[in-house]
Length: 350
Image 1 (cartoon, rainbow, N blue to C red):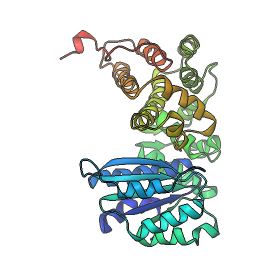
Image 2: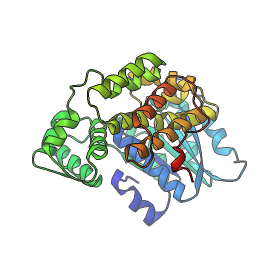
Image 3: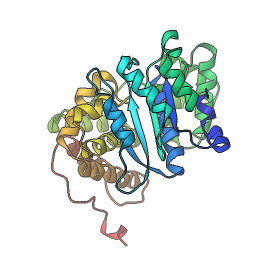
């Protein structure tokens, strides 16, 4: 069965969770959100376990069979998250997938993600077998006259009302990159909260006038350059960059690292965890690998807690200097020792 990404929730409500989901496409944001939606819907149905398999060039397809036949220690429902970066499972993979589709195990959901498929792949025996027993979600680019309505809908979903020319200007600035559009909308929400977004708000948000940008700051921290990271943070502060924007960039990266560190804690190498991360651009994967090798899951979670404390400080709910807290986050990402737990101001402790 074929289902559009926005129809997934309705489909599950009407027919329940399918044993197999296959997502195909080349647009990272929509791919990630479709996979996240399926995982969220599955968790609501009790699928609490998750195993990630990366089907690269040397992947042994017997691993899929073994994983399907293995029993959870706690008899929990689980997801097998199978990623096929090439989109071509080959003869052995096609056979393994067809056999899986014939007898999908109970209490197991197979989620397959792979790039856009050509006509031959769509008509292949293995794909037809998977589609017959599950759901096939094809992701198509949002281009041309579909882009501006998509941006406007995204703004309104974030409780932002676009003023005149805002949607058109944002569409021009992001040049068809949906992930960039989503990031800019998140930043607008952080800077201005709910309500009307004017052209002036947008111009201020996307202006690239800072000597050091927040993305460079994140990369320097992942590289482990403590001194350079703190100099860049001071430069951002001196040039008037808003603290919420800096925190937004740091927290977004730390959330990704927490997710990947969880895979490392489950036994995968840093390189294996990052290789299957569609939310990480290829050119940044070596940087993210460095971060995973420098800090463990507990440490990345500590940094995420520190981000929450910083957010409260920015909002005036904690009597601490947000920029000093941002320094602790940056230096911690770069490898400086972290305290056991983020400290709150004594007056804010219960």
